[in-house]
Image (tube, rainbow, N blue to C red; front, side, top):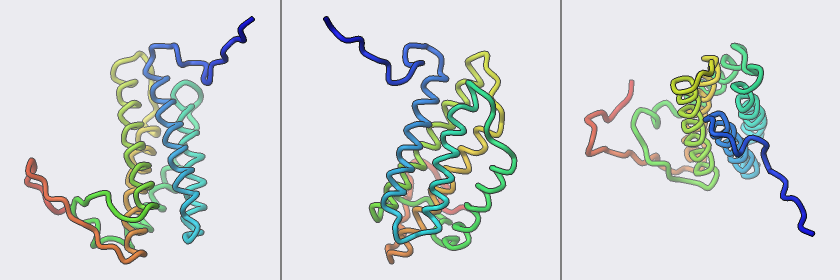
Length: 176
């Protein structure tokens, strides 16, 4: 007699993009957890990563279920971003390569997962008959920006230079 295989996630067989969004935000939370495991020398960042991980899961259910993101969450995310941005203002005036310490690399993976999660939210809103509250992509976009400035900050604290990437495709080099 064979045992029944249990689904690891109840919506895996559905064709809705909601499933893809939820899998991607779960991956985001897992990446944040990995970054947390390497952030020991940054106790304040560790606290912020816990909150960001919780927010990844709140965002996760905010399309299929009740919206669990508030304007206050957006304000808190912006405050976290602005704190790190103020410390790496010079280093973030250009497009840079996602290189550096192990923690910086993990934070860049979180940045990328946040962007990907944002895309899934937009796809759901555009191609499915599902209302996506604007707070969801707003938070995910802000999270991507947070992970970017955190990654640059971590490299700066390790005395690693930010390496500019100069695109052969676009004329833009510096940001205002």
